[in-house]
Image (tube, rainbow, N blue to C red):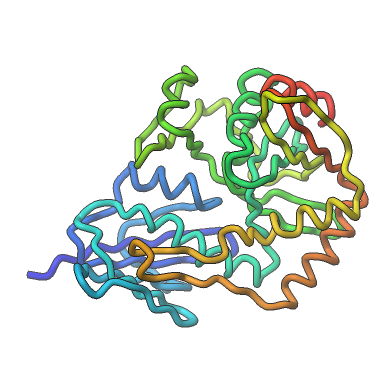
Length: 301
């Protein structure tokens, strides 16, 4: 008798991605945590109740591997071997990213913390230390976590508003073990650990206005901190708000690629809206130790 597993992923913007597979694998708590580390505002429901905005259909294949996509469906042929597939969170994010951008929601590759309803966006490429810095601001400076990895932002009448985030943090397992963080829940995948903080360390607001943006880089070589002029900030942040780094998603060990290209109009509209918002939202760039940057951010925001 054929095996079939399925679940529905509910996301902001009234998006619902249905996932089906003929692998003997089903979503569990560990899988939910990993999805929560990559997809802002994600909520997972077993089964396929209601209509899906998009479908991901997986077929277990050993030899004919790859991916096909059309407007509403992605078909994946790959060896999941009855295990949570490492490609899946990235593929689901790539699909959601394109959907959000077309609707004026921007999945910024950024952590976010808040205090008193005002958020600080920590934006930048992978490896800059955003997650570690967000944790330092939460544990040492009384901030509350909105997002650990990706923050969904809306530009509303010239103001930046964080509307959803990824509450699950991730660190390399070796770094997590050294950190001594008291996680409420955790799971290991690959060489990383996904974990949640204590309930009181999270923001109690579902949305928060962004009061400032920081482009950090944790480094032991030298320490710098300075404001970024608005025009320069637009050029620096436009790719971050488009998250062009994660536009294409490689799956099935390179046999397939999901392409999340969006229209030129979306890019132009973001440029105009971002330029307007950054006239009143300060942007800072900093490099130095974690403690140095956390202190600077705590005084600036």
